[in-house]
Image 1 (cartoon, rainbow, N blue to C red):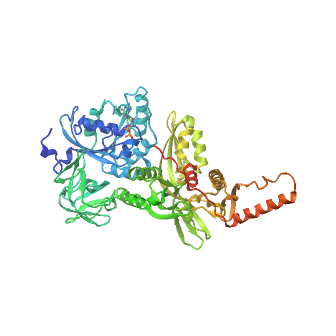
Image 2 (cartoon, helix red, strand yellow):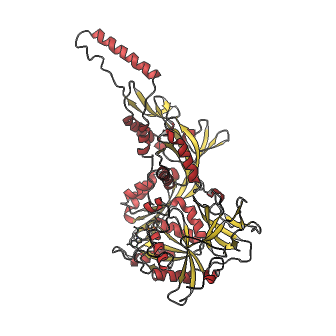
Image 3 (cartoon, rainbow, N blue to C red):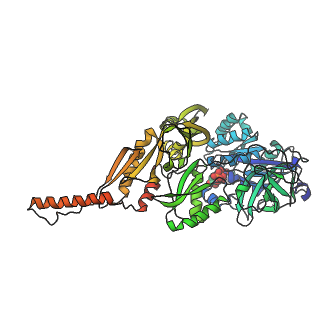
Length: 622
Ligand SMILES: Nc1nc2c(ncn2[C@@H]2O[C@H](COP(=O)(O)OP(=O)(O)OP(=O)(O)O)[C@@H](O)[C@H]2O)c(=O)[nH]1
């Protein structure tokens, strides 16, 4: 070990530092490799080791996915090669792998000089391998291609080294081969990280500038902000300033993660660490923002700060109405840790009081919902997710619609819907199936490339609304699980959309209103109407279920009345008496029809929403 002073936080020579991240398609083994690195560098010993050390949230561990990025400082002494014996400080920044969190990935990348591109040697390149690689290249990172899981019998490292080399433009032998599981090849990878990645450069004398690449809420300590120092130096007990808002906070503590929090006196150029200010809300300390010192502030913020905007909305309602206050408190608590979560109260005739919530995507929605149910013990129902529409009225006004039941009724000139640029990677055999699916979802083919003889990249522009439902499940089932998907927002397009209302006994049921493409309106109407018919019990009177666009009914189902058999005791005999009885019954029914209200058990709504095709799309792992 080098003497403490040379490599301790605040006084580390930037020349010794390497800031890097591991990028990979989901399940290609990023967390496992990170675990091995922690062990090999000695920051976690075997006794403390548990799988996926860095994924701290329970949900992360159970789902095996990384939601929030973390950064660990690891000492490494080069074992072989021309730099043998050099004492380096490695900062490994773990990045989330899912499309919903691309913004966090790109911020983490901006804090690094290099990226380890990890590819499962039994699977080859997948859609997020490409997406992450492009993000890394956009951030000017040096990329080390690495094939993982070489211990697997099904591994084909030679084949995929060719593919990877072709993609990056290097030689197949430049692709390293490791097993995160056994540790094979990992020390060599650590050596190569020191050798190939450049150390950070920054102006030590300039006013401090540090980029926030993550910010998490801790119940005991308030918000913990992860930063990478670009210029200057941040010392404990200084007052820091957030450059996007101008807010000034007292710095209570700073330090590094190794892999638990370790207090330090300062953080210098190129260093990665944490800041604690005592603020209680992550919105005050947002990913992408620049931190400077209040007494000597930097003039210009680091570029690239972006406010995360919700892409998908859904109404969340407690199944038991008396849970509403708890639900509100739970959302307030979650918000402290999630700057991207939006919500406002709404009420629905069918579901009672709840909140309209905005999410980055479907996985984000599922995670929040699961956390609400698990950590706060709430039973919730969510309405079909929808995207945000921009409606231009003929009178020139503009309405932004986040809830279908608030779709304007006046004269509409144009409607815009968000679109995404999607990349699908699929084996050659399934190209036809993928194209059929994308076309059925109003996709426009933008390009097609062969990455190798049997692997094709298809690029589509697709309406976001068409993929938030069951697109991913469909893609997987049509390609026997072989295709992978990645997408990013790509503006909006004009579309012929209509609002379909579902009327129960003549009254619109807000929870089922949906904005759909005009060609799909009929299908939506028929499906929901049929589903409700099967779920709502028969009443004393006839209940029509209608799907309508404006005043035009496009589908109808009827729940037949329970017909009391008034003739039961009237054998044979007098036909006029029979007729009289029937007349009377009809009148009774009529009265019921006019004055009666349909008694629909809430369970029926809940069942209809949770099983509808467009209901809770399963985002799953991508
Ligand atoms: N045989 C073998 N299995 C591995 C290796 N590395 C990872 N795995 C397994 O692959 C699966 C996925 O590994 P993770 O490390 O969770 O993958 P990840 O890329 O971090 O996944 P996300 O956090 O969801 O992005 C787990 O079941 C691991 O046990 C390896 O080198 N060899």
